[in-house]
Length: 328
Image 1: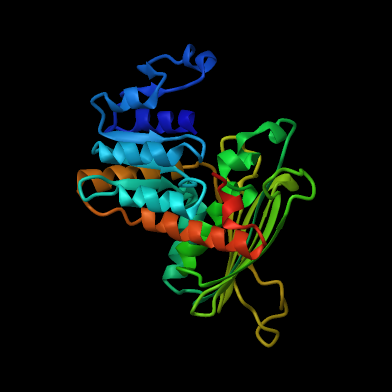
Image 2 (image 1 turned 90 degrees about the horizontal axis):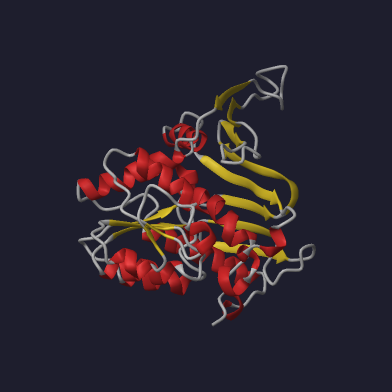
């Protein structure tokens, strides 16, 4: 993530890379084109305006809080720590003179933005419900990843990857009040979940379901948006690895038996997207908030808090106690 953010910073005309903090000496010695620090507090002592936090979940909150207290603007990767308590601590350090934004870049993917536009203008009516599948194949080195160590990550595949889909659910339908979840670690046997099935419901009666998995064996991203007059499907995901398939958007209007001979198989409009602009768009949004001194409303600390609250509710419903989610 640090490499991705560096590329975006260097392409943005309003930003200049002041330095990079890297704790691993074998990586640090190969970084060129920027000042390199071993300790993040040394980097914060430099004349910098913005801090991009691209660290494991157990470290992110302290860096965010320290940076905000020093008057720096902060852009932090998701998740905002290991627990709800972590994001609340970060929010207590917020102040009117600094901007804080979190890296929920999936909101800015071209397929999601197009789907949001269609849903908002009501051309297919109101949203009835959402269904999401987001999963991956673990891979040979997966078992050694810090993401699967509860003490560092705070949770498994739901917190690491499913959080993006949960945030998208909120992006389309707002807050959810009821949460049901089943989760287990039957295959990988980590001390965090490798599968989670979550069902959400809000006060408007809209429901959403998510399967977040590290045992799909095929990298998969699919979001179904069910509307009164049709449906939208966002499938595939432009990513650095390219393993989620070509990003596409399927749009269809319902057809009833008395209106068409193709009942249950309506005509579909398909749009393909071949360039991932999500990273640039979300950083441009962050820079705009700083330049114009306006409140962060997209991927804000409140968004981060609410999605973390949903995930913590899911863990608790699945029988994972709060003390297990983030051990001290």
